[in-house]
Length: 464
Image 1 (tube, rainbow, N blue to C red):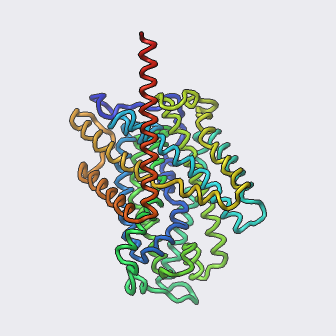
Image 2 (image 1 turned 180 degrees about the horizontal axis):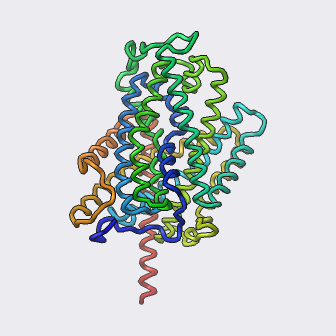
Image 3 (image 1 turned 135 degrees about the vertical axis):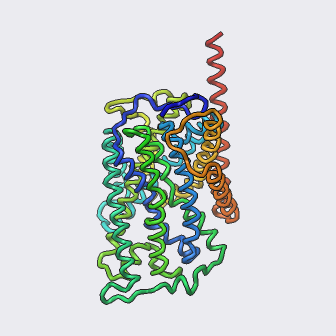
C-alpha cells in the first residue's frame, strides 16, 4: 500500500507485537469466529420466538454483520492494528471516542470470558458429572491462559483446529438434515416443509422483532478478525481472504442450519432447547445429544480462547496509546503482552471462585451483564469507515482494500442498526440492557475524558 497523505488512515501498526499468525489461521478464525453457542444453542430460542419466520431475523442480522465486516476489512487492511475499531474510532471521531469503544469492548470480553468458561464447564458436567463445574472452569481458564501466553502462533493454531472441528460438525449436520428432509434416511419419514407452509410466523411481526434481538448476539465475536490482523503475515491479503468468507459462511452455516432446524422442529417443540440434538434425534442418530453437547463445549472454549486474545490485544493497544496503565504494553517471551493477558483473564479466575461459593448463580448474572455492547462497537465501526473513507477519497489516499457500494452500503448498515435499536427499546427486557449499556458508555466516556485532561495538565506542568 502506498499512502499519498497521512490524513486518512495512516498505518499505526502495533510496535513490538509478532507477526507469526499465518494467513490460513486468520481465514479459519474468520470462518469459525461466529460459530459458537449462539448458533448451537441460541438458534432454538429464536425459533421459539418467531417460528420459521426467524429466518427473516437471521437475514437482517446477517446482512448487518456482513456490512460491518466489509467496513472493518477496509480499515484493517489499510491499518492493521491490535486496537482495530478503537483505533479507527479515534482517528475518525477523536481520542475520547476511540478509548471509550476500546474499554467498552474490553469490559464486554472480560465478562464473556468468564461466562464461556462456566458455560463450557456446565455443559461438560451435564454429560460427565464427575468433576465439579468450578474445577472444570478453573482448568479451562488455566489451559487457555497458558495457550495465550505461549505466543500468537500457538493461539492461531488452536483456533485453526477449533474452527475446523466446528465447521466439520456444521457440514455433517447439514448433510444429515438434507437427507432427513429429502426422505433419504431409511426408516425415517421426511417432515417436509409443513412448518413453513402451515404456520410460518406464529407470533407475527412481534415474534420476528423479538427474535431479531436474540439473533443479533449470535454474530458477536466476528470482529476479532480485525484485531488479529495486526499479528498476521501479509495482513492485506490475509484480511481480504478472511473477509470474503463472511458472506457465504452466514448463508451456509447460519441460514442453512436454521432452515433445517425450523423445517424439522415446530416452534413449540421441546427439542428446541438443544436444536441440533433435536434434529439429530428426529433423524434417529444415536448419541446425538451427547455429541452435540461436546461440540458446543468446543465452540465455547474456542470463543474463550479468541476472546482472551482479543481482550489482551485491545488493552495492550490502549496502553500503547497512553489510555491504559503503561505496564500493560510490556512484551515478554515471544512478543506476548503477558501483563495484558493477565489482567484480561483475572476476572475469569475470580468467577470460578464465585461459582464455588454460589453454585449455578454466577453464569446467569454474567450473561445479564454483557448487554448490548457489541451493537455499539459495530455502530462505531460503520461510522468510522464512513468518515475515514470520505477523508481518504477527498485527500486521494490509496486504500489496499475498498468496500464496494460505498457510501450506500455503509449507510444501509447504519439504518439496519437503527432498526435493531428501535426493536430493542420496544421490548422491556432488552430495553433495560440498552439503557444499562448507554449508561456504561457515558461513564467510560467521562472517565476517559477526565483522564485525558489530567494527562494534558501534567504534560503542561512538565513543559513549564
